[in-house]
Figure 1: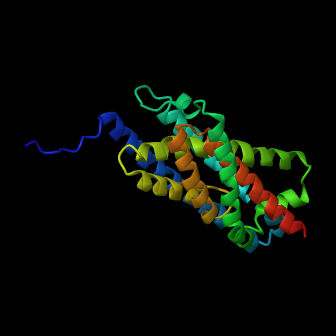
Figure 2: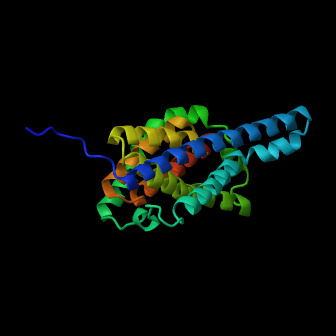
Figure 3: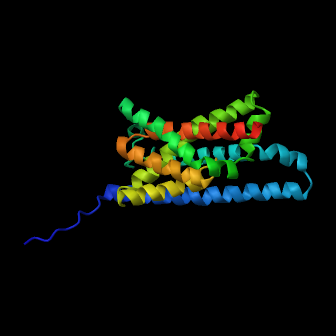
Length: 239
């Protein structure tokens, strides 16, 4: 009688798993370091009584962290994807999916938004992004910030957190473990809104990626959640 043996993980998948772990650590450590530097800088502004500069810069807190995340993502993609011999294909992230998958991605944004709304209004009501939008909505730099937050940032987070971290972890872990771990990495490094929104969005986007093998449904969910949350915060601030 032959004994059942667990299939060994291929070497290419082991390398992918290692990359996913390294990328996760890279995002967590650098993101936390950047946030601490910003906090220290804002504290020094207050201590030196430069309140005018602090008032201006604090509105761009999320914008600065978003730019830093995008910069990290460019480094990651350039190193992992463009290197010869790495088993990561950018084109596979954008594979065409049936319209039904995109509809599911759009509809999935609604329960995420509704579930996170009470926490969102309590924890994110006084964010710099909300202050910027309510005070300078039609200025050029505010429009550029909005394009960055609702367009460029969702694209980069889906590429890195789903295309690399989740996909890599799923090569060697169970699906629930890969979903939860990648979602916590996403929530901890996502530069907008609180971690509760990030975890709900991360779990949903990972499940959508696992269904479709494309970032497009999750990208749609990500962008719509970002927009809906911002609209809710802006409307609450204007009351």
